[in-house]
Length: 103
Image (cartoon, rainbow, N blue to C red; front, side, top):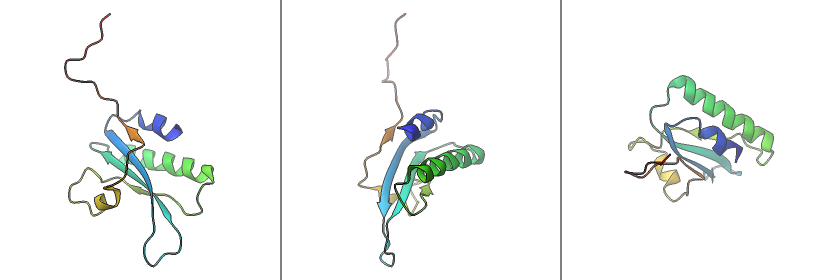
């Protein structure tokens, strides 16, 4: 929940995923944090990555460091296939076309 709250600050982030991946030659699982985003500059992306790593490190839920995958919006990203069947834990709130709040 804390990570989702932090992500709300960045309207460029559309969805976020958290999965575990185990390479055939590995004996343990690695947590992967995937971002479907467009438009984050380098400083913003570094800030998001640092905050996610700090929260992950303090959770104590994994012995392996979390890996950040920020390029899921890129259709040529080799990482996209890892997240194909994943359900996002964060989806940016969007307004429906024509929705307006009345005062």
